[in-house]
Length: 458
Ligand code: NAD
Figure 1 (spheres, rainbow, N blue to C red):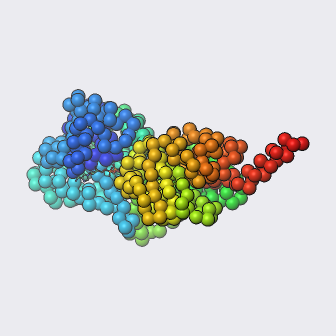
Figure 2: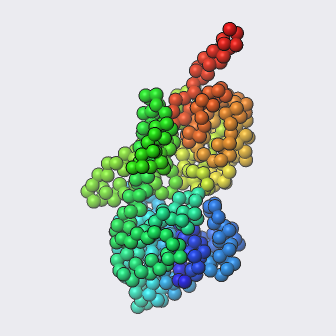
């Protein structure tokens, strides 16, 4: 059992802290946000993640897990201090390392015994070297402090599961001592550990995330071409998925990737490459395609409708993906302002993300347009002129084509997640546009209605 401190109680820090406690370590989670600490102490998780709250309560009551803003007491005698603070994007695309620097300084001024500092945050290659130097420069006590890289691969929405059942743990160290300590600390998880040097560990994280981002953008690019040449991206993806070299994951076309990682990690790697005099053309292409893709449906709808002014627009899903209340880089954040600007009266549904979204776009009038938050998909769809699907929540997937037809004033659906069957939408007489598949156009529906009438007469 080790004494562990974790800096930052976001998706990465809190989940890591809770899982280390679950594995029997003594964990103190540190955050600068006092209100977050109070909430966690009262047994409530500040973020929505399956199983997280139960494990927080269980380990807190077992005395293995605590929360504090008092970093000094948490860091001073820890065997290992994990850093899980944010590394957000700066306007030039580079990663903002100021939160990391603050924690490094706080560690340097607090530690009273030898300890390993483990950077879990996603940081540009070479940052761990700098953090180690920085800590050593500011150390107050005569102790040994080393820095290791341990990038995180969890996905929001399944963060606890991904941590307890990770496909691999990457540890990047520069000494046997650091390597053995990290190996030992992760032993109770019983998971495959890949041990490399620090810079390789830092690069593994970016290379992995950017590869997945590339895969998504590639499929979106192909999807756009499918629409033009009469192919169906879902059939194409299915056919591709049987090839083991390609694999079946991350082949879904849609309205682009969002979240707190892919957008900033693609830009940060591109920035790092440029800094080193190299053009990372593949990653640049992924960024470019994604930017276009985010408003693909809005552009399609704008061409189809004369105006959004005065139209009731149902928006289904606000978060960047299901299973999380995180809105960072969500497609909704790009599209909703465009719709409001055009005078749309938006009725938005999201099972967990509405509260966060309302902080950015409060309920009520916004210029010519307005936004109202509703608690059911049906309320959003009732009498709507047009519907946009941005997130594939279970509640949205459950809506049948017939319900669109019956609930909406004009059944016109733009589905950014390809969750419905095109033929079923056509049969239900729903005008349906999605990504990389043939649209169900209004005139084609009329034709099929006409044919049905003809055959009924003959
Ligand atoms: P987050 O924004 O959700 O949380 C960061 C937390 O750090 C906040 O609660 C903030 O108050 C706290 N903090 C800031 N300064 C602090 C300090 N000096 N001491 C203690 N706490 C402090 O961040 P996140 O989404 O968990 O991401 C953290 C890092 O992990 C980023 O580098 C990110 O790229 C990486 N990462 C994120 C994910 C993900 O899915 N979110 C997955 C893998 C890696």
